[in-house]
Length: 120
Image (cartoon, rainbow, N blue to C red; front, side, top):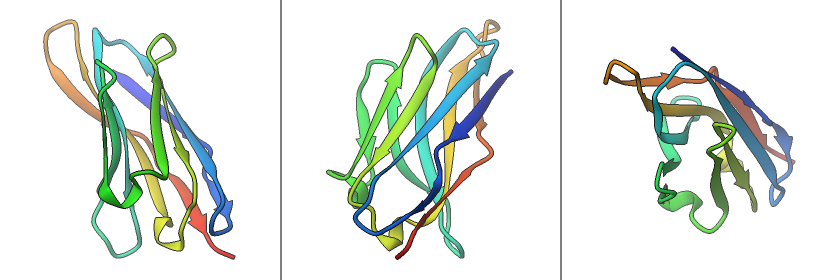
C-alpha cells in the first residue's frame, strides 16, 4: 500500500508562484507515474501534469509554459512548480501515482488534496 502526502498549497496573488510537493511512502515494486490533478468548485477533476518513470512529461494545455513537474525518484517525490498563476488556477490539487506491487498488480492512489487559491 502506498500513501501520498501533499504540501505547499495556499493563497497567492495573480501572477505569483507556488510550489506543491508530494511524497510517496509505503511498499511498492515500482512507481510508474506520478502526477497532479485539480478540481475546481463545480467542475470535474482534470489532469494538470504527469511524469512517467522515464522522465517524460505531459501537461494540460492551460498550464503549458507556466507549470513544471519534476520528480526525485530516489526520494519518491514529485513537485509542481507553478508560476504566472491565474485566478482560474484556483482548485484543490491532488497528487496521484500509479505503481506496481511485488505481486505484479498495477494500483492507483490519490493524495488528500491541497487547496490553491489565486486571488488578490
